[in-house]
Amino acid sequence: MPEEASTALRVALAYHAAWTTKDLDLAFGYVADDIVCDAPAGRLEGRDAFRAFLAPFAQLLHSATLIAAFGDEDKALMMYDTSSALVASGPGAEFLTVAHGRITYSRFIFDRVPFAAARQAIP
Image: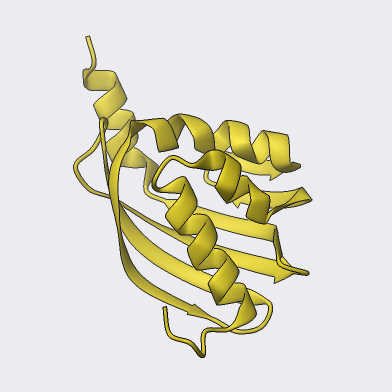
């Protein structure tokens, strides 16, 4: 990470590195108790709801490759590709708002179609 990385980008990259290596306790140390997350399935409110959303996928994750990350003092945007037990390539993006070193908002974006097709193919 560049030394001149903004506050929000530093938090975002640390959170991303933690959850993509299945260290959810560390990852959620960067998440505010009252986080709001807008995800493809709808709005999640609170750290417990957000963790319940992210944990099952994190457990299936084989790897994540960061494609790009940008940020300023209170916002960060990351784009990455994931490989999981369900799909070989699952690109995603997260737009995060950070306040006082904690993620307060997440706009989590990924294409649900390949995941739904993979789940339907399971006998």
